[in-house]
Image (cartoon, rainbow, N blue to C red; front, side):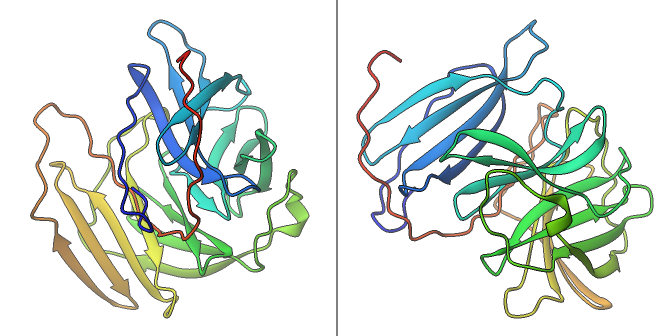
Amino acid sequence: WCQSTFHARLLASKNRYPITYDIGYDNKKQYKMLNYYKYEGDPSTKSRIYEIGLYAKKFKEFGCDSTWSIFQSNCVSLNGTLYWAGVDFNNGIFIRSFSFSTERQTTFCRLPFKYDDDNVLALAVFRKDHLSLLNLCNKTSTIKIWLTKNKINNREVGLEEDVVWIKLMTVLIPNFPKFSFYWYNRPDLTYFLDNDDAKRLVICCYDETNQAYIYIVKGDTFEKIKIDQYEVLSDQSHPHLHTYIPSLVRPSPVKEDNKN
């Protein structure tokens, strides 16, 4: 859906096992979507780029770096470039990035803490040019929010020493849900910081019954809001939650790829 034209379009999945769909744009302001997916019986992860226009789409497939696991957090778009937390099986956990201009996946920076596989991670964009990171200890329900000290500029290769993280807050929400998950199936948890009040935290996630809630936290006070217009799934599958940040970048026309 494009808020500037009020044009909506459904894009059918071309595979049974999509891992993630994430939208950004290149240096020509052309909207594109990155899809990671698997085929049944094939342990490898594959990827596909869709070029999205007003009336058509086209896509191409390309390979993945096999040394990296499935995403360990949600994916966010900052100035068209995608960012997420990912695990390097040899060297630990980092923030990874994908540029739609170069169509390259690179290591952006190292995370500012030791990673625990039982923790839940989530990324968010703060004030248009900073990244923030939520680190939830699933055992204690302690939530730590980290923020990049400097503005994030798009670059093809990240330089770890250039990215400085500061710990913004530590909060403990009473009776916060405990998540059951495996390293290859992370829970859906999204959040954002209030642009006008960085100490105000808003989290959206589901509980043990798959009911979705919104938590609003500031200091020692918090509010829990049930999402009433929400259907609890009966097939034990988890809901998919996304934080939507409007963009004024207008989509460009794209010629339909009739071969696909």
